[in-house]
Structure formats: structure tokens, C-alpha cells
Length: 140
Length: 140
Image 1: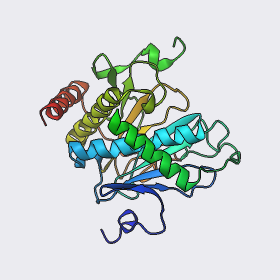
Image 2: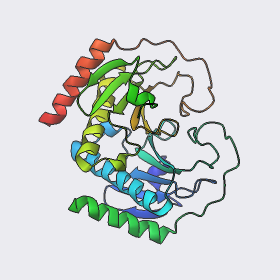
Image 3: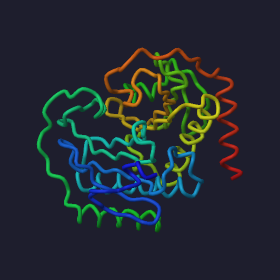
């Protein structure tokens, strides 16, 4: 859709993509490594996809989780597909740390503290690790 | 774990269960139909499960989404696996409506209005619809 920001895909920091979906690094202050997995086609809900498409998108979400866990050792991973504002299927994959701004609350609640500074993994490293995790899924 | 409320599984409104996971109806004021899909075993992250377990849990999450969409026709479904407070794998499956207390914001943000009243689907109906959706997945 011409007015959908996730269809337009402008100014994205691309980590990985294929013909179906893409993984982008989100520029969210205090949340290094926050990734979004975006379905390329404009669909609103997981159950608007067929079974093969669902499986593929979720595999990419889980490979992103695995890559972020390996690189950042977060205290928790948060996964969410909301899309109330932008109803174009996308998953938030968020490494959470006990000293981040909202822990243990969701990042959408009121902040509890100033986030401890923490470097984001370099995009090239994240990209290579994600590819390794996807390869492992296929082999497994 | 003996001190984990999701291991204890007390006072739950059970919609469906098998040996691996269960679907419960959440008693959250203003959010009729809000379900939680809980992995029975105490694991924290999706990538702590093996591939077959991941697929099974996500199939149940998506069947729950499908059942809630059929019964309630929500404006959006929200899916989330957070677990920062209770690190025992569980998925929130939340029917969202434009006139609920937080829309279009996540339910964890500050409320914007008083939720419009809306009946929850009866547990027996939800349970039967979920079974039908799971059967459809197996057939599909």
C-alpha cells in the first residue's frame, strides 16, 4: 500500500532479507540490538498467511532471537507482533536487560530508570550470525 | 519450579490443553477473549525448545488467533511472548478493538479511554472453535 511505511521500506538498517521478509535493526534509544522482522507483502495478521509462509516468517523470527542471544546474552528476549498503528505484519525481537529502562515491564510501559549504556552488535556481525542460525535451522 | 505461578497452574480458566501446552482465558478487565498459551514445562525462551516443540507451540498460538478472529472479529490481534516477570514461556493472544482502553497502543501503555463493554466468548465455544482450528491445521 502506497501510504504504508513498512511497504515503503525507506531509511531501514537492513540486517538480512529474502523474497518474503526482511530483518532490520531498529534505532530505539536504550535498546541496542532491537530488531524488527517485516513481512514484505502487506498483510495484517499471521493467520492471513498460509502455513508455509507462517513457518518461514517464524523461523526468521526465531533465528533472529538465536543470533541476538548469542551476540548479546540478554536477560530475556521479548517477541511481539502488534501492528495496531501500522497493520503490516512485523515482529519485534527485543533483547532485554535487567538494567534497561523498563525491565521487567514491557518496553511500552512507563520507563523505570535511565537505561545502562550498552553497545549494539555491528550490523555485519549480526547479519553473519543470523545467516548461521538460519543455516543451522535448515540442517537441524 | 515450585515458586513459578505458571508451573503451579492454579485458578486457571482452561480452554484447551495437551501434554505440551495449555490455552487459558485471562481475566483482564476490558480485554474479553484475552488468551494465554502456556508451555507446560518450565523454559524461558522459544529458542530453548527444539524445532518440533517450537512448531507445536506456535501452531497452538496461531490456532488460538484463528479461533478468536472467527468468534470476535477484532480489529487486530496482538501476539507477544515477554516473560520478564515470569520467565516461563507463555504467549499472550489479545483481541484488540478500536474502542478498547489502549488502542492503537499496546495494552501495557497508559490507558487512553474506558473500554467499551463487549462480551467474552463462552469458554466452551472458544474451546470447540480452537479444536476445529487445530484440526484444520493438521488437515491443511
